[in-house]
Length: 266
Image (cartoon, rainbow, N blue to C red; front, side):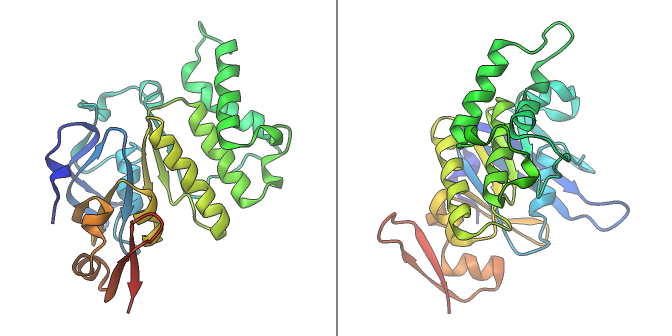
């Protein structure tokens, strides 16, 4: 099942015929074709070990595919310099390691490194971008705190602030709500939706189906390394698709507040 989204040409990011895996083992992704619309919030969903994180890492050029190509605005990322890619795409991995003792301000400021060079050192513009990123994520008051003393929700907002300071139009996040309580999960997802509504393109691997249905504009569903369906939440979150993707017998109702689909396992 593939919706009309896959026929649109306003792609910010595309993967064409991607085959990817680890070491000499069997391929995790097999001839995958995906498109990320400009200005969308795309959720990648699917069962455990179906290739969600592998797809995200390949789209971000953290992994190189064994076959196929990834394109940003039509340009092949394989031929881009690392600095050129970093000013166009920001990637937040699962549970990134925090340098010991680093403060919030110092970590967020690292997002500006791709924009600097010998001929373009730290500037007033860099300070303004960092301050705006911290304001946007609500971490300005934590600037002097060591990151390793923060709660999980605070720490995740700091990492997102660093990605915002990188000032890219495309932001990829691998399971940004993992290990957070429900309040902080919603807080992070609301922030990502606000970023998307302000013009950024956001892609996130998500496990919670009803959160993906509520916050995402587009969805890519994987199973066993293949794309099973793409489309809007209303198009994908149906009993037949949930059965095909997850072997899940369910009902789907409408959220009375948002009108988004709500998946209820039987």
